Image (cartoon, rainbow, N blue to C red; front, side):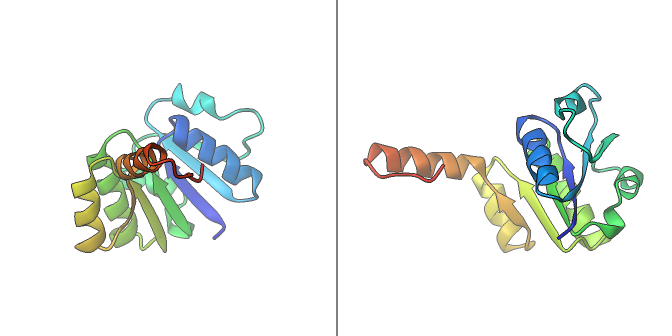
Length: 139
């Protein structure tokens, strides 16, 4: 896995982009807000693209045809789902990971569509319950 595209440059997207860049990945970040891309500090040597991840031309400019992975962490579940499906089914990206907030959507897209989904809601709830029971969590 060498070339990674990240859609969404909020707190999660920008931190992930910087960390992956520092680990030697070729990273391209897409966000529709040019101000969001400022979160990428001077150490980030990857590419920044202003646009939306549901626009196929933007994805092509980001190098999706050579990407080994795409991670979409945009603000809305619907956007992440659309970006994920375009990446997986149109561009055949080998590894596509979606952030989904709604656990019901996560279950559907994993079981019926075969997408890899990360649901912060489920992770948070499970962590809080473990902490309530006095169990340790991995953070």
